[in-house]
Image 1 (cartoon, rainbow, N blue to C red):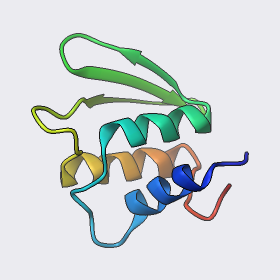
Image 2: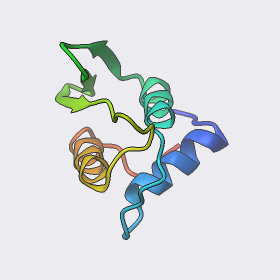
Image 3: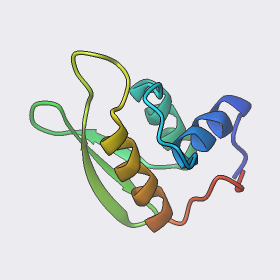
Length: 89
């Protein structure tokens, strides 16, 4: 799978050793779409994601647009479980 430079940059941010607080939710959604994930809206701020048979539920950040460090760590674990690593394109 070939990812754009922007998607690869977002993936690297998620997998950095020091969790960041500047990764925007829309960037993560764009990355998930490029990876072939199925994303659907749930109740309230919930978003259901299925990638490579792995399911997860995340909450859209609010009132800001950036994911908090806890959510980013959960996203990293989700991507690892789905077989996605930053070295892949």
